[in-house]
Amino acid sequence: MIVSTFRALRVRGAKGGGVSLQGAALVALALTGGAGAVCGERLDSLVRNAVNISLAHLEQSVSEVRDSTLYPTYATPRLKWILKKSDDWTSGFYPGCLWYAFEISGDPRYERWARRWTAPLEYEKSNTGTHDLGFKFMCSFGNGLRLGTGPAYAAYRTILLSAAQTLSERFNSEVGCLRSNWDAKPAGNSFPVIIDIMMNLDLLFWASGNGGPPFMAEYAARHAATTCRDFVRPDGGTYHIVRYDPNTGEIINRGTLQGAGDGTTWSRGQAWGLYGMVVAYRFTKQEAFLQMAERLADYFLGHLAEDHVSAWDFQSEIRLRDVSATCIAASALLELVRYVANDSLRVHYRREAEAMLTSLCCAPYFTAGIGTSCLLDHSVQYLPVHSNVDVPSIFADYYFLEALLRYRAQSGEPTDQPRGK
Image 1 (cartoon, rainbow, N blue to C red):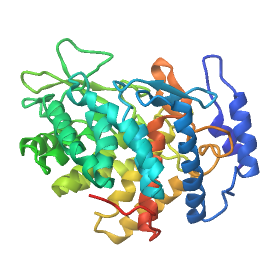
Image 2 (cartoon, rainbow, N blue to C red):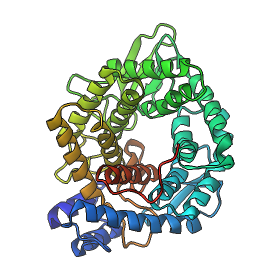
Image 3 (spheres, rainbow, N blue to C red):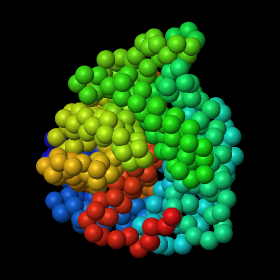
Image 4 (spheres, one colour):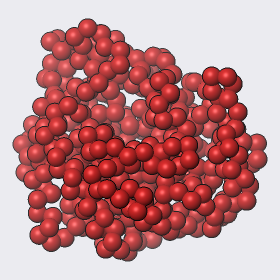
């Protein structure tokens, strides 16, 4: 236990690394069992503790953030949120966390706070410069429409449909995908597609079934099918980026941006792919998407560390963990088990998700007792350019809360807030 905790906190920097002061504090916390939970407890108890502390942290975050036009993204090594405007790709996750807090607790304060940080995001509905409108709008307005009642939410549907229309304009019929808004290593006039976009298909699928045109769902399904064909290696690992000729749809090259190398599997990209395939199956019921979700899940689970928290890249020699990838995958697995027909495979995925949650609810990953409004530590955003490495991330917190909600629902422990629309 002591050795594995120490290794999980070890940071290998340019000079060989070592354990930071923050890491030493987390080791001490891990050895004392954290605040309010002992990690030998049953998962039900760990989840209950994590939910209660997370609600308190989110209440605290409102005072920390204050300005409803600013949004937590990543945190400093001192576990204080770095705030950005709504144009950042992460802006939908903080109101999403507040919506989940409302769903968990039924406390109207969280609904009020969620609406407060959701409203300014309407400005982004016409933002043609990003492929991440699904993240921005389904986490915020999408959850708000699902959970809220009354005339105050009438405009949410229209806003979501407008955002979906903007997103759909990134689709290229020759390629069969939505275009990425960035590429750090462009190949001439290529059409870049990153696996992250699988997470934005939810908005198009939803819109097509809620007043939007049918072609939105068709675009989403084609994007998912193209991803199945072009992004997944024979062993089930994934490329981060595929570059296409925009005129013919032919592949120019494949590789990575945020992973360790073109031939490695970046764990968060694998998690994005897994989650996105589960969503594609939810809406289409196409067996190919379910089979691909299982294939991506099997690779992810087969490369996990002993404590079931993923490395930032599954083939990298730099032994940093990425809790964000683990949270995304855990939440995806807890939906995937609803669709898997094979009893033993369903039990396997459920147990693996529970093993992930067990570690995520404990030190050094869960931040209980450290005096922060961040829920989880040890995410990695973009290690090759040394950006936000081994710090909290708001999307880890979002998918952690979602996984907790899904676990509780499947365990028969209801939230205090009935599910809405």
